[in-house]
Amino acid sequence: MANPYISDPKDVELEAAVSRSVRQLGLGLHVSVRGGHITLSGIVDDFETKRDILSVVRGVAGGHTITNNVRVARVAD
Image (tube, rainbow, N blue to C red):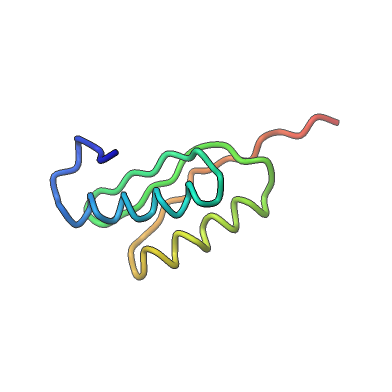
């Protein structure tokens, strides 16, 4: 679903592409794009997943900037 707060069609397309890629990883993260800048947020189980997300998004985004606000869930001892 397109973000109603995005007015640039290129941002809409980029957000949709990044969102599809993240969903293919089986993750329900929030993706937003503004002015070509991608922001990711949500919670994952481990640092490896957080790293993998960034790698996948870079593959979709090309040269766009990315802010990875994804947090790793605290693991109970």
